[in-house]
Image (cartoon, rainbow, N blue to C red; front, side):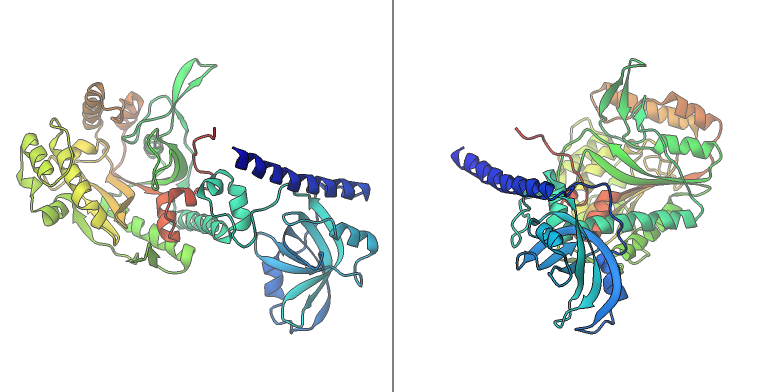
Length: 497
């Protein structure tokens, strides 16, 4: 406790010194928190514009830049100013700045935001520089930044105070830039393919579209409980019923589940639906989307994650779940017709599973235990059990235990999930009934009956392929990030104290 108090006092001393400088600025008539600043260029634009300017050359070009002071040498004579695009050096000297401006420079601290107007030159050592003619304080920082040479390494602080992380760690800023490029590339590809971007509700009266435990909230005016969206699927398919043949949504979803390096209670996914398509069409567009995202992120489909080389170049292998399990364990679940025998076989592979589980749950458990982690290169795992796929169409191959569904795995992680969508309203009602029975038996993640969705199907849903891609997990892989918290600007954290 004594050490914590001492550290707090030290921080207070730093803050006190900065408050004194703020008072000195105000005594000079400086508004340390003005309303705006007319910036002419960002740092990167100047570097590009003056790339051919030789060392020692001085231009007649007057520019205005703005950013945060990250280095301050020789009492402010040389300042490294950082903006979103990069760094530019500022030269503050009495030959160019009047005395009142030099007085302002001497009151600057690391972390302050300033605007600078001046002449562009390149120093004899080759660094692009602005000879400052006017310096404007844009925000006086009252707290010091983390120590320059060690940066911000503490993970807890990085995630709780993301603004500090972004100020001092350029790799964190680059990860979020790449995330933006990834999402932008996927959006552009779908718009080029004729998909319509839509928005569906985040507050649902029925938690549907996925097998997950929802968050519950209450609407005071209506006096009803509502669920935060676990998936947009059922609303998006209602739009297909309504005549929009190709729709997509880049959406926030919420699931009341545990946190891990790959799970956050709120996350971003891309869901799309295409009329007159099936799950094989969804495999093709999954490959296109991920390849486009990889190229936008790093310029190539050849990536490295955690030291492992991964080739995302389409096409990718397509392997059935039962085939992969048989290959890894020697157990052919398709030859097992009894649920109890399937559970015993799954336990024989080392999987943990309840004694009353279905045939499909047993196959899935064996797959999760023995196969998932081995799928490093991108692979479409096809032909899922009907028991765990209440929204997918029965497999046209004839085995009634299977549906036309696939999940795509990269680095042993599921990144995509897709179906030939179930379009028969009577079959859908029966599937919901089975889910409700499981829910009554204690399965909190089993789906609820959405009677209105069944009604929508009775008006006719054309043959439809549907796809969901987990954006956060995909960004992790494409940016070689070890935790989902690295790729979400503000991850969910337990409150302090």
